[in-house]
Structures are given as structure tokens and as C-alpha cells.
Image (cartoon, rainbow, N blue to C red; front, side):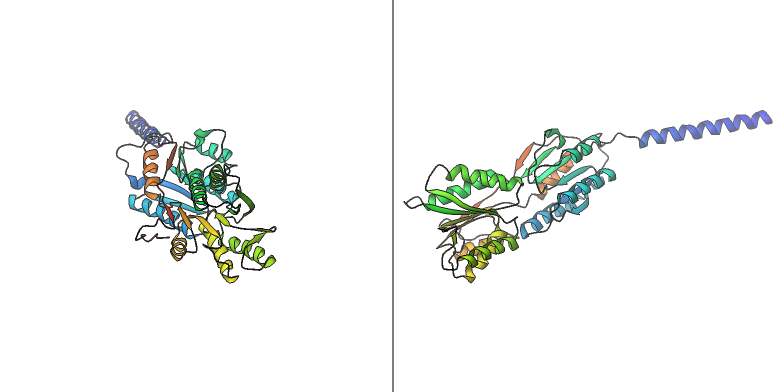
Amino acid sequence: MKNRFNLTAVFFLFAFATCIIFATLLGCKKKGAPISESKSEKSIIMGFSQIGAESEWRTCNTQSIMQAAEKAGIQVIYSNAEQKQENQIKAIRSFIVYQVDVIVFCPIVQDGWDNVLLEAKEANIPVIIVDRKIKTKDNSLYAGYIGTDSIKEGHNAGRFLVNKFKDSKESVNIMELYGTVGSSVSEGRNKGFHEIIDSDPKFSVVYTESGDFLRSRGKEIAENICASTPGKSLVVNGKKINAIFSHNDQMTLGFLSVLDEYNIQSGKDIVIITIDAEQAAIDELLKGKINCVIECNPKMGDQVISFVKTLASNRPIPAATYVPETVFAEGNLPEQIESRGY
């Protein structure tokens, strides 16, 4: 009887140990391995870090991605960086700890991402860069970029200005309202713009100031200039400004609100070129207060989520994908411009 009891005990101990080993093997699937065919899209978790909510454009961009994720049944862990890179780095590290399937983020500036992206790579979590580009020593630290072509946007701004003043023999003094210093979009727009205008000596940028893509800063810059040289012309350092190239609509709209107070006619006395194509800027274009609006398309959610699903299935995505954009200019406007939605 004693031997029978011992044999029974050994049998149950062996069965229990076998179950433990089997369960452990099932739970130790390597992170980053291909998702099985049985795994549904609803089991995908995406970490999403957005720059902030500083404009209608940014809000629309966030909503586009969030709505596409919801439609696809993808769970999102969202973080608003409130315009601070350190907040984005903290968010990305929290996504890594949570072991999300894919990380998506809009980098506020280009530099300073290598360490945290290396951490993501070591955790086998792919990263998608959205809207703004980054500079890195190792491009394998992220899977791909999707957003706008900022250099092309600068080209479009320069071409409009050159065509606008093609018959003028006078010098054209330009003010450039720069976006966030260190951001890829500001550098790209500046580079593209100068690649077009610098070939003609009559064009010269006589004043540049960063408005950090904020409406309040655009207004502040205009108030400082107009208060120091009151009159019906915009004068900087003794030079009359003939044109303003603004890196985004929010700075433009803030600037225009001050010009109205000083009875300076934008669109006539000063040529205004702006980028984003928010509804408010299109409205000013239709009123004749802005001469050219270059679209920066925020509605990239469907493409982003498509790439998230691709990466979660352990398949590659293109290194760079650019969203389609339009140029709206005086004298060349469609009869009806659809509502922008932002």
C-alpha cells in the first residue's frame, strides 16, 4: 500500500511539472516575433506620442490617427507632450515598459532621439515617425516616416512669390516667420524656399524670427514691429516689407490680426504666403487678405494605422511616405473649396 501511494504521488508530481514547463514555453514567446494568423487586429496596442494641441492642424492630425485606430480596433496609449521633448522621451520609455506592439510619435525637434529609440529597438518594438523627421546616426532605429514634404512646400512658396513679382524691377524685401527652431519642417520649408528665390538677386529675406508655430507668437512679433514703426506700411530695420513667408497658418493669423489694427492691408500692401491650409487661412485667402495658402495635410491617420498593422505582422514599411497636398493661390482657385475640417 505504501509503494502504491508513492507511485501515485510521483505520477501527479510529474504531470504537474509537465504542465508548468508547457505553460512557461507558451508564455515565453519572443517579443517581436510574427503575429500568428489567429491574432486579431483588436489585440494590437499602439503607443502614440503627439507634440501637443497648439493648433487646429495638430488637433486634426491627432483626431485623424485616433479615429483610424478606433475604426481598426487598435488599442491606443496616448501621450500629449505639451511641446516638450523630455515629455516625449518619457512617453516612449513608458510605451517600452508596457510592451506595446508599435510606437508612433511626432517629434518636436530632429535631434536627441538615438538613445530612447535604441531602447525601443532592443525591445523589438518598431517605431513610426509621423509629420516631422528626425536626425539619427542609425536609420534602422525607426521603421519609416510618414508625413509632408516640407522642402516641396518651401518650393511652392518660392515659386508663387517669384511668379507674383515676375514683372517687377524693384527689390522685394521678405520677412520670414520661422517655425520651431530645430524642427525638420521649419528647416525644410526654409531650405526649399531659398532654393527658389536665391537665384534672383531682387529677392532678399531682410528679417527672420521664430514664432514657434504659435498664433500668440505671430501676434507678439507683429505688435513689436508695428509699435516701433507705426504707419500704413510694415517696416523692419528701415526697410519696407513687400512679402511675408510664414511657416504656418497660426503664426500668420496672429500676425494679420495686428496688421488689421494698424490698417495695413495684407494681400495688397504686403503679399502673404502661408502653410497648412487651415479653414481660417482659406477664409482669409477668399477675402483677399492672404495671397497663397500651401496645404500641409494633417489627415494621415488611415495610412499610419495601415503601417501599424503591417509592422505588427512583422512586415516592413516604406522608409518614407509623403501625403498628397494642394496649393491654393489667388487667381487660381477652384469654384468651390471643400470644408477643411480643421
